[in-house]
Image (tube, rainbow, N blue to C red):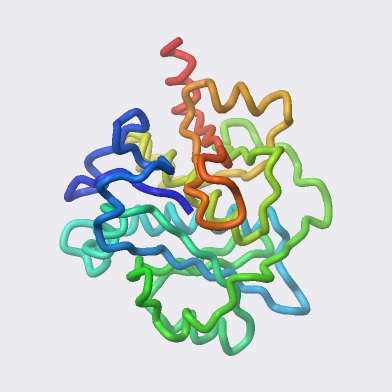
Length: 257
């Protein structure tokens, strides 16, 4: 889990900057710790007989975050707008739970969006208070979300945004899904309005891949958005987990050198 930038009233209109003292994803304490804390719930469908592949689940989770952030209900006077603003005013937290059978059907009945990709289905819900989960989500398990890829994922296609995972950190599938969501959110915040709209109209194509060990230092030092985990679960505070390599951000980073 990670923290967030203080949002503008219309998140669509203003992009937080990574270099600000109260930046979107810092693990140090800040004024946002005093704000009411919210969490973005994500539920992955994990049927016993046909679990999704790990990469499909990570990519669906990242795409689900983008779908929610771009949804009209999350802006202006939309029914989710206040919850999204409150969530982004405090620490940016995402929690992934798993559901199957009747659990999944109950989750689908709640207000949210289901995103499918490959073998995976992930449902994202508007943010809820940290201690105020709907009962049908609160009863779902967080631990045990262990997934595998049946084969090595292919290289991402040309021009596809890639969320690169740190090759030196082992994470459960649920943790990695949340981190991929953080990376997608950082990329979204850094894009212009026109770049966001183009990504949305294309259906938010993206890939989640593990970086080569020799490539990772260049990704984190090259001006791309980088997630630094707050250390609430699994890994040490300040750990760099994801570098968001969107073509528009990549060209901007190279142009700034």
